Image (cartoon, rainbow, N blue to C red; front, side):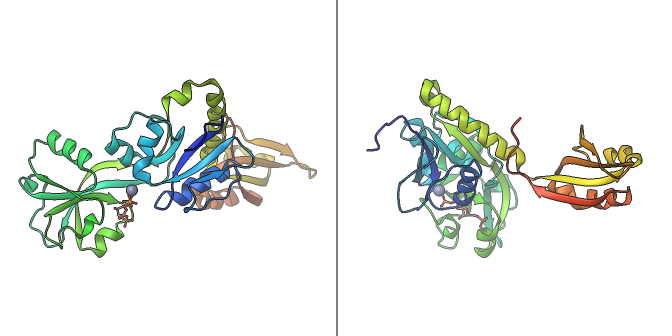
Length: 291
Ligand code: PRP
Ligand code: ZN
């Protein structure tokens, strides 16, 4: 048993789709720890936090029961397990869909045609809820893994499983029919831990760092030089430029302008900035933005 030593415990998927990005998020918050999927428990050196490596399917229950105070886990798993946990943040990674798929050669082309058919899944609760809401009676075949093989083995006519990149479906000759649930990773908490003053203080400190890191994601810091006369045009070009920092340069009539810009529009915006008179454009990564 893990001693309750006043330290916060956060559960992560030990090995799978969410592991790398969960670790990257914690590390981007300045937390230092070793992580080995073989070891259940990794203490943080510079924060009162211990990282627990668990199977993702178990994380909602463990957080609900207080084995961990916090957890990073897919919305899909939280919905399936129906655990009583509080969502603190949507983390913007691990995007996927729980989908109904059929073999490429199947004659099933609509939801209605699934009536009476066998559907294999590791998400029986979510699937049954979905079928009930669409007034469809099907036979739900509950498996514990390798659902994509069920049609080939003739234990099902369709499957209901997670699709992320779509590779698993493609290599197994499956055609997506319909989305049952959209999901991304969540930061969830045990409600009693949030009510505990000491733990709450730690959670709040961690949340400030996590929000800072999420805010900085996809953003770059841009610095450029330009003639004073170009400022109005430059302000129109940079969408994020509500109140840029503008400082005079030693050269008469020239300024340096600093701002934050979204990474995905960067190249388009940069070309426009150049033709509006900007020069010496420097773009650097942002680690965190604390509001
Ligand atoms: C899902 C699903 C597939 C895979 C699909 O597993 O069961 O194996 O992801 O991803 P793709 O579309 O990119 O090929 P998940 O990551 O949820 O892991 P788990 O079932 O082992 O918990
Ligand atoms: Zn899983």
